[in-house]
Amino acid sequence: MRDSTYSGLKRAYGYDEVALVPGAITINPDQVDITLALGDKTLEIPFLASAMDGVVDSRFAIAMGRLGGLAVLNLEGVQTRYEDPRTVLDQVVEASPGEITSLLQRIYSEPIKERLIGERIREIKAGGALAAASATPTTALHFGPLAAEAGADFFVVQSTVTTARHVSRTYPLLSFTELRQILRVPLLVGNCVSYAPALELMDTGIDGLLVGVGPGAACTSRQVLGVGVPQVTATISCAAARDHYFKSSGRYVAIITDGGMSTGGDICKSIASGADGVMLGSPFAQSQEAPGRGFHWGMATPHPALPRGTRIRVGVRGTLEQILFGPTSLTDGTQNLVGALRISMGMLGARNIKEMQQVDMVIAPSIRTEGKAYQIAQGLV
Image (cartoon, rainbow, N blue to C red; front, side, top):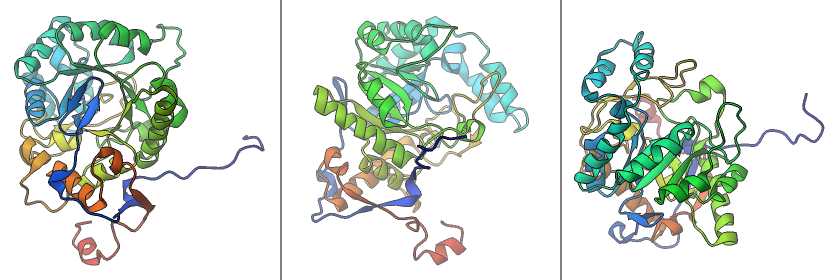
């Protein structure tokens, strides 16, 4: 039973409940600056691809890099467990819904081959792209140096929920400060959804914070564990911590909203909520370059005891370039995501990402349905 000081539930908001308000000026879309600074490096577009096996392999990472973004390779996935992951991915694609989870559990029980970590990173570098690699907190201190030695430009530490303080009797607490000093490359950490934990993580010396618990299309953590915060509110909270930390320390930590976005409008609302960039899974899983061939599954799907994800069919809808830059004949906002961001910034009078973070946003529960009776009737909304 809660005590008498309990103040009640807080209201949290997702993408479909808010809208962006045009400002006093408009700007040509080709004149806005959408670059993203991560540590000592700058991306031409503020888009990262999730470290998921249906999204990123070496080929995809090279294509993403050539288009100005960054793809993150999962160091605990099929790319580092199998010499030829294509045959394993074929099994995943062809499995029936009833057998897919047990199949993934078997596939991911294959030991990780440390030699492949370096090989995959070097493949990406040889293709002329920046290389980013991801591991969980339990393996980061071991796999991180292997990735850095092979030439990784970024290292990402991810778990469903990440904090600077972790209690465990089975393994020691991972020190992000120590890891950052060992690797000497920009360190991104996630995932987080609230102010206080975000502030503590920033104080460890990280370069970027991933925001989002359970919003991904293939993730079922919210259903299985009941944990998560809608992405607009989560991003606002973590961005507030970033701004406070910057004022007190003079050091800027990038906020990357991770998951839950399917359209250009969602991405624009993430930036307006305070994000410096976004990390996407399902939208990129729909590209011709993605290794999942139109299928997508979360990182926690193969958990041996409590799977928190599912394989979903997203289909192959175009090239990665179409998804990012168009041209597109689709009217649902799922392609030309960069163009959508530029046009939205122009309409809102935001010259750069920092100004986009300052635009007005209103609570608008009817934003997707107001005046859309015909679209609703035809199943378009």
